[in-house]
Each structure stands twice: as structure tokens, then as C-alpha cells.
Length: 263
Image (tube, rainbow, N blue to C red; front, side, top):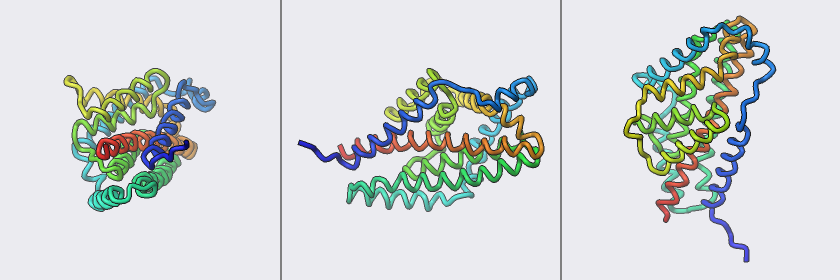
């Protein structure tokens, strides 16, 4: 009468609920009281400056910065651990063996959020706003790279970079646009195809613009000594949001692959 659900079904249900909760919370954008107070004080040219700074940071890291980021964690060790966990799960196919992948990914994310908070607040106290962008962008990518490796995925190819950029863009979007990006991400998960006319530079610019628009007021505030510590705290808030969305999408991708493998 009551059929026991498999470990896969339980994990799939959890990630589906987590995704729906994430999307529901961002159906519409609500400006904070602080943003409203800062609206008239932010220089009109700052948005364009931030757009370029984020785009440049993404471009530089994708071109020659990934190897530097990889020095901050043990890539080979993460890959080895994934293979061990994958073999264990193939043998046991239990709830515990399936949850191991997500637990390791979540643990690495917590450490990165803590580090980002210390760096963001420190730079805010010193009045460093825009120069913090390469550091913050590097921490975003480092966090996503580690999540990817814990679920058995690489991140160097054009397709994987597109996947990552869409995750970042989706995490800081709202309403209809957010749902459209979410659908595009799911389409890549199912088909692993890059559109024929895909332009990585354009995708970087779109992601950078969306990220800079969301962080505009906070990066302005972060450029003011001492008070800027408040702006630095928002590095943590947005890194947490982006990594949460990354966890959801990589876990969905991982589980779909598992389903195909197990039939």
C-alpha cells in the first residue's frame, strides 16, 4: 500500500523543493531600506564602471586565472574523493552514500563564505570597493569550481563556463527573467549543448552587468572607509545566494546523470 521510496527519489524530491523555494523567494525584487537611502548618492557613471570591472575579472580568470584559483584547493584530491564516493555509491546505492556528494560540496561552500566575509569587511573598513571586485569574482568562481568537482564535473570548457555564468546570472535575477535563465540552465543539464551562435564575451558582459547592478549600492558604500564594512558584508550575502543556486543546479545535474546510469 505504501511503497518505500528509493534514496534517489528522496534526494530528487529534496532538491526540487529547495529549487522551488529559491525561485519563489525571488519572484520580485524588493529594494532594501539601505538601497533606497543610497539611490540618490551613487554617481551615475558607477554602474558602467562596475560592469566593466566585473566583465574584466571574469575574462581574466577564464583566460589565465583558473590555475591560480586551483592553487587554493587540492583539485586532484577532490577528483580522487569523488571517484571513491562514486564507486561506494555504485556498490551500496544507499541514502548515506548518495548524500555524501552534497555534504562535501556544502562544507567547502561554508569555508569560502567565511573567507569572503573576512575579505569583504576588511576591504570595506579600508574603503576599498571596486578593487575588491577581482577578489570577490575569484571567490565566486572558486566556490563553484569546488562544488562542480564534488559532483564530478569539470569547469574549463566553453560549455561549462557558460553553465557557470548562467548560474551566477540566474542567482541575482528576479521574476520572469530568472525563470527563463533557470529553464536555459535545465536545458543545458539535459542536453549539454552550447547554442550554435553562442558568444562567450557577450555572456560574460550580461552576467557582469546583472551582478554589478545587484551590487551597485553596496560597492559604492564599500568604497567609504569604516562605513564600507557594511558593504563588505554583502559579499557574504551574495556569495551565499550564488553558491546555494549552484548547489541546486549541480545536484540536479548529478542526480539526472545518476538516473540515466542506473536506468
